[in-house]
Length: 365
Image (cartoon, rainbow, N blue to C red; front, side, top):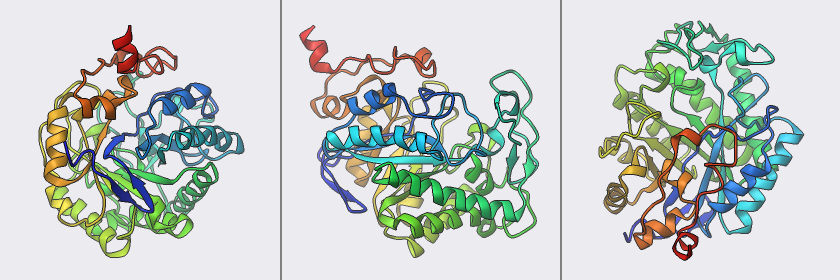
């Protein structure tokens, strides 16, 4: 386990280990998107000295959709709520990055109190039914001037995160949300400068990176990708080519980014698949800075350790971090993990959120 617990620098921040808290939507904010005291306690529990915590995704603007009780980062009240979380992480010596996203065609207008329009790269709906049992809505393709405005919304959200005290932001360019909808050929059939070629489909994402780096600096900027992923109906004709272009572009222009974060393809995030694949080498070879690997490691701890040993990557854990607030220590000491309860992931309650025992408490009991 030497690599997983070796120090590493991301941006200007020194980490003491490479066990990363993955961004995890949990629906514990208020209906107005303001982070709650429950969230403060959750992140405080999982903070370690020199450990990186990436928060759940926050909506970048009032137009970025409605997603249960997920948090937002565009009002003073929301910024103040996030500041309590950043402060709690820092009090325990942790490093805090806030993830930013826009739903795009994932939005369900009937549950949105503001009835915001469903938008995407192209007028292509997500296949199948949404969580309410309805056919996914047909999105409206964004106009070029709207795309330019969205770039500015991501930029302002990044500035808001820094105002809230975060060490940096991670752009959610994965899992079928808006930026990912532009990148994937299956959801982007535009014929203008934002569609068609790999270069054009990557343009929106790279413009957002440019704007955020300009606003807060490269050492406080990071991005997450899911090459070859199929979650929420996305698909791409050549994932290695597409994400190699994105990675190479970032290496050439923004080599000082805090990190890049890649997810191994999985059939679904809604089941308990064990992922023992390692398909990210094409992108590791192109990116020379810190690299986070994610995807299915919660049920494959030994595989996570092996990947870290082989690559030197940071490893992001989701479900196991939910159930084990002291996950880095448990992995290091090879202590048995608490089992997570999927039924409590999205309830909005304290149960299954802040009541998982630390192993020392469990041992004492």
